[in-house]
Structures are given as C-alpha cells and as structure tokens.
Length: 159
Image (cartoon, rainbow, N blue to C red):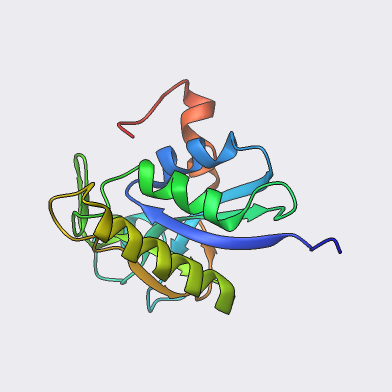
C-alpha cells in the first residue's frame, strides 16, 4: 500500500541551513522556510526576530515515506544542530532559534519521543536533549527572499 506524502516541521536554528540540508535528501519532495509555534497571525521576519511572537524559524518538510522514513528524517535533524542548547544554535540566539519537532501525526510524535529518549541515553551529549516535540500549529511561510536563501546566494551555513 502506497502512502501519500507526509509533512513535518523541523526547527533547529536559522532556517536557511536547515532547509538547505533537507532539500538534498532523496525522498524529500518540498521544503519551505517559515514560522510556527507562535501566537501572531502572519508574522514577519522582523517580528519573529524580536522573540515576542513565540514563533520558531521552521522548515516544513514534505516527504514520501515510501522513499525516506520519518526515522531517517529524525536522524538528519539530530545531526544538523545541537539539540542540547536551549534557544541558541551557533551565533543565533533567541527563542525563535529553539530546537523543535512539530509533528502532524500520532506516529510522528511517538517516533520523535522515542528517538529523543534514545539520544539522551546514548551518551552522545553531555547535556540532556532539550528539543521540544509539539503538535504542528499553523505554518506561516517566510518571505520569498528567505526561501532557499543559501542556494540563491551561494552560501552555506554553520550547520
């Protein structure tokens, strides 16, 4: 039985680098940088950067689970940032840069929580994993100039 495409939201610091990484995975059909988890409708980048909207910079990942599993996506997510640092990734500081998995299904929630627990027990990190695992809320696409920013500007990220 073929599944339809699924989606998940990953926040692991600046969305430019996160999007760039997920764009290159076989089975990922589309990514979009944006904002999720806040309390303001249609936030702008400038508003999110203040830290007062509650949003995280997030990448919505649409993928084909027949080609790439949710667990494979989780492994990539854990590897591309420091999930033990609250509200900071590299030079980026603030609640908008927090580590979050925004899940859309009960299965995604269970798999993400299990993976987080295994990562905590693995001894890979000295500090505990602080990644939030929360239900997806409304996804607000970021402004056009943020979409595939690194690719359009010949940049890479600290990730």
